Image (cartoon, rainbow, N blue to C red; front, side, top):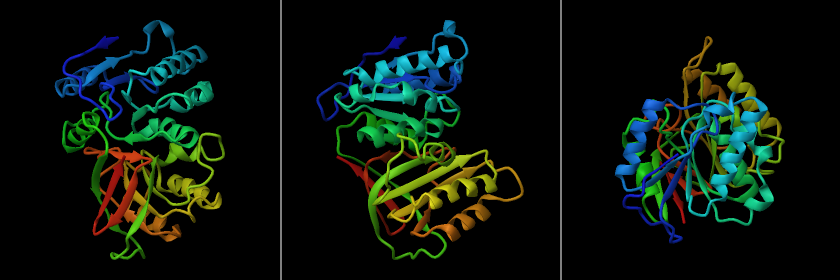
Length: 305
């Protein structure tokens, strides 16, 4: 474990910004991670990196699940740890949900979990069970962290008091009108990961009034449509304010991204927008689960007080 204490910024609750970096899912790219953590330290953020212990064995074996769960629980319970940043996605976050003491966490200050992809399971579970906000954004243990405008935005958020606000580009797709104005609460993440939470205690009972943002990678178009049918059949889409589709990268099979988004829009019963600004891509601009959002005039603007 390493800790850097230079020049901590201040957040709205008066605590110094402590960013705890964990490995709740797959192992990070070590050289990439160390280089990118330096960017955060140079911004004056205190970084505490909790490695997965080498002697704990296989991450997916039960002993590995228990170890990862204990590390995550400790970070979420630490009053000094204002933010928990996942080093990388991959697989494993959903293993940990049943190992968290949800009753104990409910009495603690809110910790903001940062990441995307597999980390979507943890972020949406914390939002559904506790109302904790989370940042869907870049992770430093992945080569997708590019030190571009998305990382600049993330560093600015982590270094600044609330209210936070930012924006991404969106455009209406299908039958949605360019004059449409939509307001709602942001929720979303990786489609395949979130689809696996539907029907569990870790997913909201309703998405009424939310703006749902979705992205994914390395799927076939048909599998994505199967996931989307599940949302439709569970009546999760009808109450949404809107859907924002990010990038669906590295699709396999015979259909491209344009074909897929067209099919999603045909099935969607609420306004659907498209954005080039988030997904398993670089840049991957931060979006905050639990933030108030407004779509108008080619942009989605969000704010978290």
